[in-house]
Image 1 (cartoon, rainbow, N blue to C red):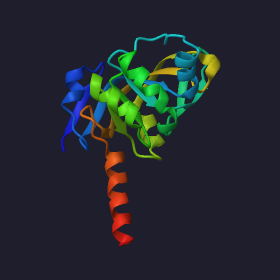
Image 2: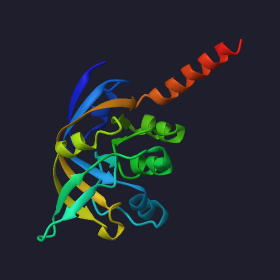
Image 3: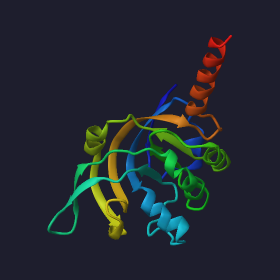
Length: 192
């Protein structure tokens, strides 16, 4: 296991060097995205208003306060479970060039296959770390589709965001699959 300091936008080479259980920290830009935004992109067929190529998408619907000048003050930016948004991950990766997704709970085999084909990864964040995440997000730089508040498309500038765990790597390895297999083997052994 190794630690990598990554700077966005990410390249395929940045991601292919990572192995399961490595840790990463991010400097640069992360896009906040959630169910409603992805429904607009994929179910309604409306292209994202930002170039996501080489980007990192964080599964979030942040708590914010709008300032008088129209910008947003961050209050609490936590991460939500990714699995329910799994159907959108292959499109983000293959159509829009997203290199990494940050969330909790992992993604399923179709998403893992897309990551393997194109060179993308899934970074797990510790649940309940919203206070730390909020501090590591330096600024909310831009917000698109405010009618979806708080599930807009967000552009966050981050510094040393993490550490995040490489929970699914671009080689098809999944920490979630491994844990499930180990648990199934232990259950089977108890039944003998």
